[in-house]
Image (cartoon, rainbow, N blue to C red; front, side, top):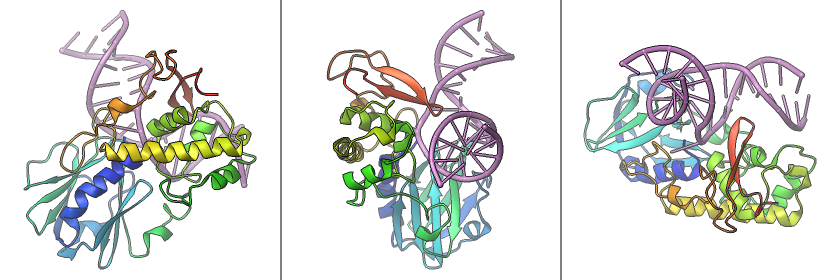
Length: 270
DNA sequence: ATAATAACCTGAGGGC
DNA sequence: TGCCCTCAGGTTATTA
């Protein structure tokens, strides 16, 4: 469910409630997420939260002795509750904060994870080989063109490859290619420098707009305050099969690539 | 090495 | 009401 804008919306929502506060204790009702929640997290007591960062779709909670690395998977949400409330079936983790508030992690499908590391998160196995952040200058037209050389992969699944660029999931890959006017059926190696530039500009713009709107809520994404994101109504092609293209009026089409749905306009995207 | 696929898990919705 | 099928915002592990 969450792509970069939703994770960043979550980070911005929880950061003011966590930084400078102490985690008094942790309640774990379900340890079996993508990987088991390590004992180091379950045992945390009276730990100051120094900062709340993000790398790709990972949230990084910095404590004096290490970092909690959180991923929301497909269905994860984090909310800050004003007090401890009865837990539902999929409310797997609570952080009890010195403010009296409770940070609650909910994840029905359990594709997310909570991991612990005492080394810099950037060196963690899961983060060490990630591509550039899309909203930094490291993600440039020159970089993307270089990456695309010799790559026979379809451009849409290629954009979703975390080694190419992080944070772009199934919604924003389709949206970015629509904005760039590039067909999702193109092979990465066929892209010209100018087309790579269009893709880079479009990815940045789409992600920035989505963040401004608090992310995209299709069915269950909620911010830390429990509010949905408002970007869904601004999506141009995702989940709009059959609707008229907002540029040319031809119907939006859908196809399957790498087992994921792709939405596009065959007239506007070449 | 690269590229395609199978797998993890639960819930919602549609057809019968 | 129930059963079976498909689909869902992600990523790793396995197979070609």
